Image (tube, rainbow, N blue to C red; front, side, top):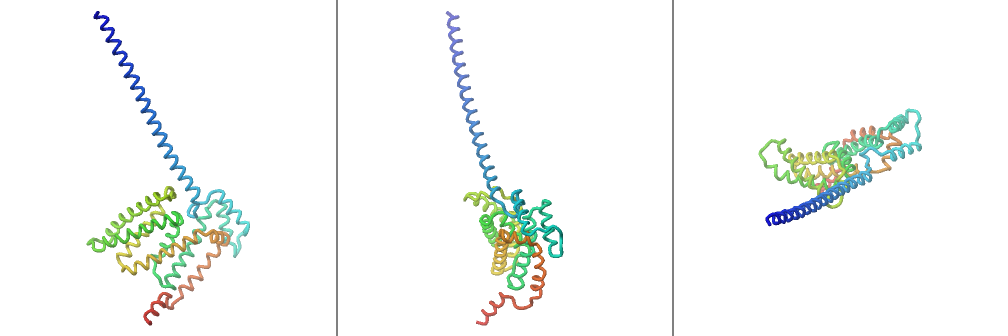
Length: 303
């Protein structure tokens, strides 16, 4: 009797153990399935992001990036419109540019290098002849190239955030009893946070080119914001508005010139045009009359 009862207990516990093992196997299989599905979902999400980045990189063919092989071949084929096989007095620069592109130097880089003196001359014309101040000489040029790199819409979103950060920095730091450079360091914190906020907002509203942005155009925009803060700490509100507004307008003009394929073709095929900045700057440098903006000021006083 005891043996039968013991056998019944053993059989009963064996059945329970088998069921528990089966339940554990099923639970483990479900967990493995869930983890596998989670891994697949995570992998698909990462793949989607990578695909978006690839799509953005394929579409974002701006002149601040070296051109791809098909574009380089197209540029070299355009040299047939003005093929220079040997350097001459009036064709030395064209020969130089064509050989440099054939050796592998990006034509986009050459174009931006040749365009920089024209943009700098435009800044000189604005300051000397028109009479409007700007943030230094190269800041409008750097702003133009940064806008080309990040895109005009995202660039304007970042610029709006920078202007807001600069205004808030002026309100918070003007009365602070600390040295000038610590003030600029604190303003850099606000600039960084507002730029980060602008990038997040741009991505949320659908501007996926943010996914492929590098730090360098963003850093240029932050440095421009630092220059605006520096001006605000020294100048009045009206002067700051004039300086900042003029710089932004020149940056936008430079952006449209940098984005123009017509301007690019002209400078690549006829690079000796860049030598025109020599007489242009001599004429601007010899201008000693009233600036155009001063005519409007004096006419207002006369009325």
